[in-house]
Length: 176
Image (cartoon, rainbow, N blue to C red; front, side, top):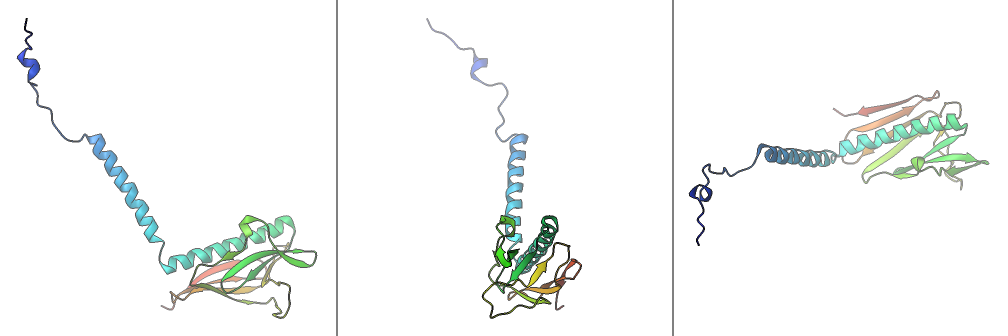
């Protein structure tokens, strides 16, 4: 007994179209777009002027936050500034001690970025104890200062100034 398969079952009356569906193509386009966006963002931040700007803005914001912290907690906070780093200090029993808060930890600047400061606060280089260049008072006031944030890779620099009443101004200074 032989079983015969009808011919219409052996041959597909409508040929099957090969290829991708619209949904598959759209998913691939979206994935490629996201990947290109990540690559563009990672390469966009590598210029020395962008690095200098982000460091200047970070330092300005941290000094502002530290000033508010001094006002809220009714303490004195100092900013110790070196050429390649800065840190925040609190006055504890007559001595300046590093702050233990992670937000106000000491920070080392990226390679090539340096700081120079002009402050009305007198520091004695021969003293063994640390004296901060800028003092943020619990009244919202601060010692006046002018801070230059520069890079040996860029001719422009940022100038951060602070006055007696606690106002800060961040300016971009360009030779052009």
